[in-house]
Image 1 (cartoon, rainbow, N blue to C red):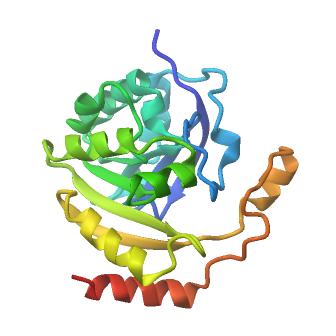
Image 2 (cartoon, rainbow, N blue to C red):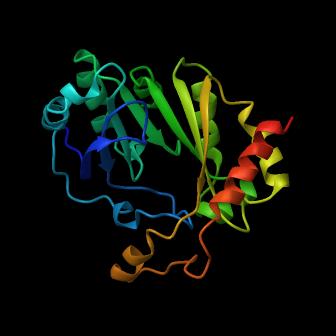
Length: 235
């Protein structure tokens, strides 16, 4: 029997895709982003739900979706549980429920099959070059680049998210490189700049984890908006 490891479910999400969403947070992630605010989801925990059970929970919120809501799979990294994710997508597709996948694109198997069923990919851009990516997330960029290549063979709508971390992304040179990088990504409908925040700090303390950005201030929201405007003007 296929089972998955789910950390939590948010019933009324408003920022993880269009409309009102049920957001499902998957356990497990191979990346160790310096700015991660969900370290409690790094490890793969006990499997606690079947695809059918999860979809039944999701269906309870269907009246709230109206014409443009649905479910968003987030985490953690949903692609780390590919068989479970694929079966959930199959069941949701038979119910005609909109599916969004919030991912860093670091899966290894069944990606094409999953993309065939997903309506929207919310792709988290970590960095635009291999050295910067490795320094930021402690993993190779290769899987993310392979995922982007796979997107070129599918028709998924794509939203891009870039967390802006002070001293890493908050400069015009990086913004210009980002503009060039995302030209290779197909079907992009929306690009979001998310200012780095300190909301995960207490989790690191509670879990007795080293927080590499503990002393780094939050990203100034006004400067983040200025960088976004620079991004829009960049060629």
